Image (tube, rainbow, N blue to C red):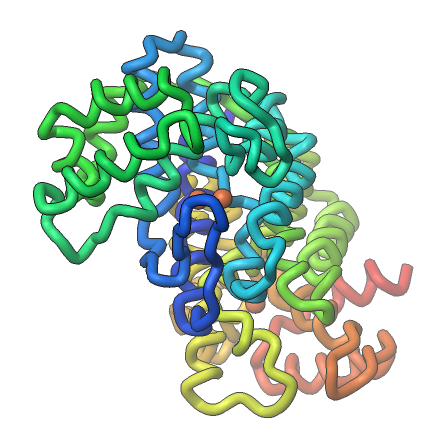
Length: 413
Ligand SMILES: [Fe+2]
Ligand SMILES: [Fe+2]
Ligand SMILES: [Fe+2]
């Protein structure tokens, strides 16, 4: 099976942008980078990855970089803040935020398929030309793609979505030029002056929703394909990001993924389908990136509003996974795990004939995994206690009794 990597990366960068936006609710503390006095707390991270990607590619063109470097920059700029996806929610005031998210991003992408350099480029995306960045790299020791992302990232932070682009052009340009030899190399400033002298550069920043057209101009072909196994590696990264949002769910997605895979094997599904079930398990809660951590981590009963916000995670799971297109079956199995046979599930209130066997299996695996996990207010239940509760759910037409019996056979055998 060939999976279009472009669609996967774009969907995941949307997930990262949602993560940054979800942090706005509890975004009261400041992150200020010492050298540049950049205040991240005032910035609205709407479409951050996308805009950083666009600026990076413009700079790459001005620098006349070769096509494979541009491809590499495309992937790394869309994912550059992958290590921050939980930080934005949790640790805005964390003093080491800048260094930590570079380290985490680099670590979790160390095994990233196709683009072996990604981990290094992410590690150095906050370095300064004068060596005062978090890893203290200097000048040409900083990989060029990381230098480019640094400028693009700062430009997006300086850019204010609420004002017309032409009122900001001068201020942003002079800010960047003032930091020549400090944050940016003179060569990079020259490339910036070149691409930012075009009006279209600024209009593209302003028309973020039309950016796909501009990106297509800068990178006409991104013909990289993943095998299902390579896609699984990426799914692991995102499954872990979600699991790490909360210490009590530290093994939730990986646990479901293993359970769903075992049930699929037990039922004699072919290898490709078993692997897809595994991936669906890893990604089933990816929409939780859009839920603020203070709600996900709340130790106590949720208000009605908070519950409604939590419920939206499966809506976002579907939005993110549907963007991947080629894997519509995985998207369905993953995002239907809170649907109920009586039609009262969410987010789509599907009726029983619209919920496939695979989605039903995912649903029972999710409940089993959640009940056997420890929570702040209770210990993890034993398999026997869990199945007793789930038997009642099946009797009440919440979950599928057949899927439940497949799970029992798998767990007990
Ligand atoms: Fe960053
Ligand atoms: Fe960033
Ligand atoms: Fe869920």
